[in-house]
Length: 255
Image (tube, rainbow, N blue to C red; front, top):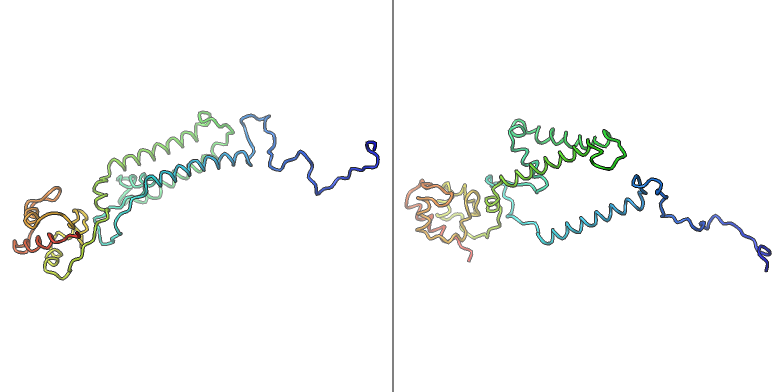
């Protein structure tokens, strides 16, 4: 058969022309380093970076699980809650005189609002196509200032917080069964002890009284002479009531 004889080439719009792949981006080689196709080039890079951070975050979460504290007690006014690490900067900001008390609205709303608003306006204030940071002084300065402020406030919050006391306040303690109608508990509830050690001896400003290991004689001595951060002469009742209270507290064991 001779070429072209007895054969006709018919085009069909349902068949895609060869050589045109749907996911191949346009050629941007004439603009090196200036731009690239959003799909799939740019988006693929973003997904890859996001996947790396997500996997790293999951590994850290498994290696260091979030600590649990005791059940929330709305009647415990001695407990000082602390936000998660990413809000520690705001927590520290509200400690300063110009952002707390009557000026609380300044630290809680106005200052964060101005900071976030400024960062949102940066892309509109600098429309340069340049990618190098030193060629874009305005957004670079804003980001460095924001990073420095967040780092400083978070650092100050961490170093100035009493973490040992916070851990003692929030630790999970064993519960012990006791008779709230007993004479020992009535003496305890009517004294200043309950304000520091909790209504169920779980602790607060003071340590838990469950499984303290102290004998009745040691408890009487502590009530008169103090121990650790507990000052002396805290007991204001009679010696007879103190002895009954000491014997009651000695029996607060879960073992």
